[in-house]
Image 1 (cartoon, rainbow, N blue to C red):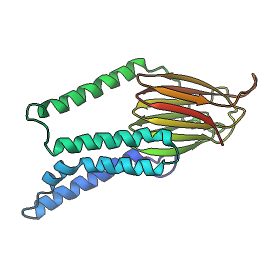
Image 2: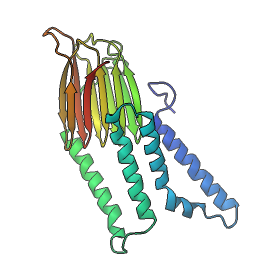
Image 3: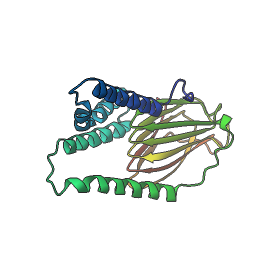
Image 4: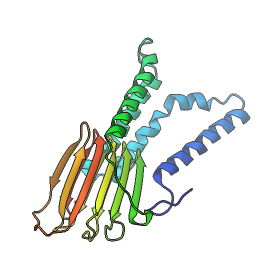
Length: 234
């Protein structure tokens, strides 16, 4: 696996590797132990994994209430899926749930892709990229080393702490995703320009006043049903 920017392996790849390992173990037991029906049990209770991920993400980022949107969304999806796998729905409604969910997800991705602004990322050495699916995590970023921070998240959250005053005119945070919460903490004396777009996107920017010549950090957000909060570092 390719090393992650923060060291080690990316959270998304860890989840994928864990899913492969669990799936392989279930199939191995079923084919070697007579009478084992683990796949049927897994098909019934797999949403519990989403619920556990949501709880773990909420506990990890409990101090940053804004980024709890991701864990809460994950809990909601897991709960709805668990209700569906336990078969409480009427017979006529069950075949419609999956197609409608896929249709909504596809339309949402098309909307985001169509409205996405063109971003020149530049050489890889000056760009830091982070991707999260179903996770929340803190990110410490030094714009003096890598002036461009690219965040991609789905049902997740970031708590971004800007460690130093931007020294480059192109210092920027680029965020795209859905059902996510993003907190950005900037040093005092840094001007912030926010360009945020997307259906259901809320933003709350409260930073101290700066001089006209102050260094500027640009934050570009394209996200659906998410929230952005920008504050000065306490």
